[in-house]
Amino acid sequence: MNSKHMMPLACAAAICGSVPAGTTEEESAVSAEVAVAFDSKFLSYGLVDNNDPILTPAAELTFYDWVTFSVESIFDISHYGKAAGYGDRAWTYQEIDPGVALSHAFGSKDAEWLPTTVEFELGYMYEAHPKSVDEDTQFLGFAIGFPDLWVEPAFAYELDVERDHGTYLNLEFGHTFTLIGPSEEEGDDILDFRMSVAQGWGDGRRIGAYLEDVDRAGLMDTCVKGEFVWTISDGVTLGALVAYSDYLFDSAARAASREYEATGTWKRSWNFVTGLSLAVAF
Image (cartoon, rainbow, N blue to C red; front, top):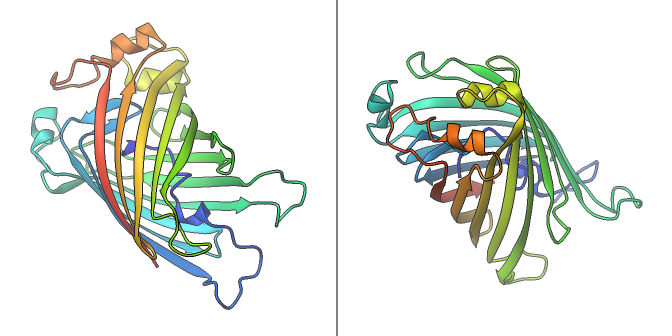
């Protein structure tokens, strides 16, 4: 689900695997991934930015499992923008997001005192729009996760450094169930299913920029998500998801979220989103 702008800690190729300092002959110093995702609607912090489907192509290049350069673009695939007031951009991009991140996964092989794997990501992203859609902005973010724990906790921090200067936090817990194990020893699972629940929080500037008449810090979107990941072959994965998002714990924010949609086509605080994705790693 494309729900800007949190960095995809669990999915980024830069931190899916860990390579100790100094690669072996079998390990490549450079890896790449290209992907395309289809989502039934476009949410920003649980709020509807596009109530019609979007297409998101993306690519990234990772060096030594530490530094990743990435870019993704959001395409309208309907005439939604015309009614929303930013022009008919059907099959035209409405956002391009280049970024760079420093990320890695550390385990007991790296430090004996670590009881479990620790993933981190520190990143920068520039969000570019056509002038007719929105003004550009920039984001700084930090994320940390513990993928080997049963509840797979992950925490992310985001700061908008140009537009609203707001801070957004997100805490997620989940679990991955292996439905079909690897066909060979030490290989990837063929089919996994992951359930997760995440809660967002915004400071007064972030909430005030998105929710009218609510200018104080508080809880924002709650997201419950189920994801299937099918490893078709080495380096090729197909994903499918369904997610439910709502403003559950703050009545003022929940009421304001119903008015976020400028076109008035969605007057509820909750959303169901479905999605498909295809990724190829090299």
